[in-house]
Amino acid sequence: MKALVIDDDEGIRWILDKVLQEEGLEVLQAGSIAEAEAALSEGDIGITFLDVYLPDGNGMDFLATGVLSMPVVMLTAETTFGHAAEAYRIGAMEYLPKPFDLDEVRQLIQRV
Image (cartoon, rainbow, N blue to C red; front, top):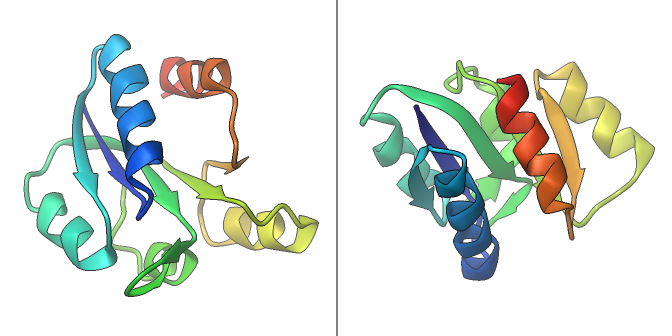
């Protein structure tokens, strides 16, 4: 299974890449919505980790378009209840505040 990590923070992409590969996933990375759209053409993506704030748009708006048909985990430094509730309402499987617990990421992969 492939995972797509969409985050403009190279450090976040790097650590998620390492953890997801340890869990046996092939990882695609994108630093923007435009790069994510290109990565989606690779197909067979089983889970996406999506940052809320990206240089070319809002991750929640991108999720709301419906192009992400796989489970989506929202990543954000914003940890308000309203933000989390909105993420779940538009289809996020999980909402992880940064910094996140790597064991929680591993458990998410096991659930998917």
